[in-house]
Length: 382
Image 1 (cartoon, rainbow, N blue to C red):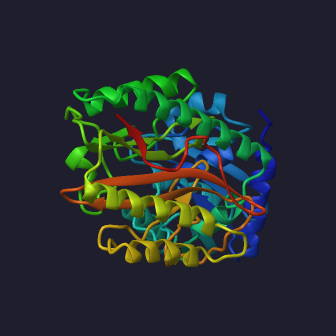
Image 2: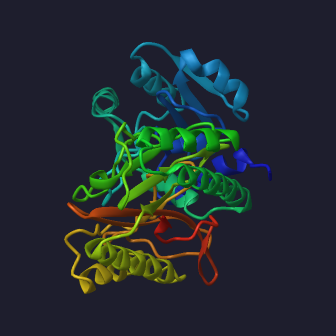
């Protein structure tokens, strides 16, 4: 695979911090740590990028030796027990950052989900109480703006992760049959993606998700952790995969239907598939993301199913899946070539069933280019 220039990344973040009026960016999100270190960092940690270009990492001592060995030219300071905020303060003071303006990972406006690693309330209160002359501010855009448009090396990794999710979906679908349990299907998917190189099923919602029958139809039900429920004929099955390869994520969810749908299920399928195609067609460069979301909502309304469709149509994808662009009515982003998103379409009707799309696509010069080969439709099995 193409190599990644981590020093160049760090310089771009430093430059953007300056452009936004910050003296430093203190990133605690896992996606930021991965993006700037090149090492898997699952424990509590931070990356400090000063506006003049210095970059260093703060990380839990019990995992630091591995990260130092597997990361790229990392200057690292270790902490034990609950001394994380104290070490952050020491490093800020070392760089003369006892006043001025420092960007923190606090929240994504307009997003209900919290990205893994956002600064906690206790950590925030500790920093502000001991460093009262620093103006701490929400600075997620310092790095999100940099991560928003993917370069060739990132696209290569995202394409690879998507290809692995294709294989996992295929193997999972092949295992769907009456009598098989959700857990059995999830196990087949896990085995398949591990065989192809996935190192972690990254979702906080249950890793590889599999839901069948009534478990696909929870109102607004975006989560189906696999259980021992047996699959039956004439019902929906949702397969939702989250492989991670070289720190880059795929997010692929598609529905399967086993048997013959009844009229209510067919109506749901027709609405969902039309919404999916509308959303894929909507992602043309220059169009506001919020306008794309409004087009999907209009299809739900056309079919009289708006109360069952979610006004959420996906999110950014890279070293984090809780990152811009968030495809909803509150987005301020514009569709831009080089973005990679997990395009979503969610339709869940209690008593009937539900379908989920999470579909990795690259925004090209003319619109959405799927990174997966699996078709964005309901996959039917006899």
